[in-house]
Length: 126
Image (cartoon, rainbow, N blue to C red; front, side, top):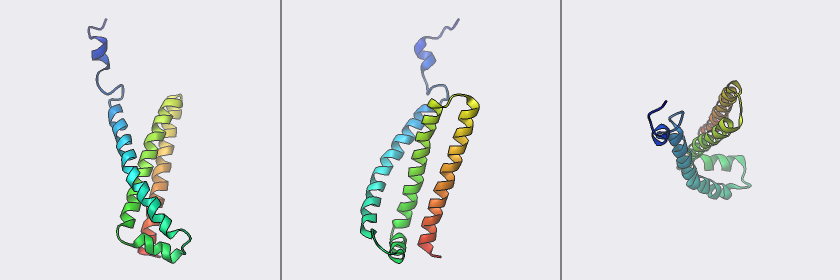
């Protein structure tokens, strides 16, 4: 027999004790993506149809590499958070869930690192 009330048993952050943190990080990363995507669309529209040298010059000028890397990091982090929720909700079986989460996290970090490497390579030439 439990002497605690129903409300006292459900207070907190849920079974994993991190649900609220996950919720807020996903919302904040979504909000951060709004100005980054607007900047990206407006900036890239000026180099549509340009040759590689012009595009490299655009990537390497002013604050563009920093904003591109911020966009990539925020976008992939936000994507992983969303995929994590989907996997946790719809994949049944702990082994399958854990394996899928590990594979998705590995893929997100690998593709994100490749994208950041591409920006760095375009910025500093090769």
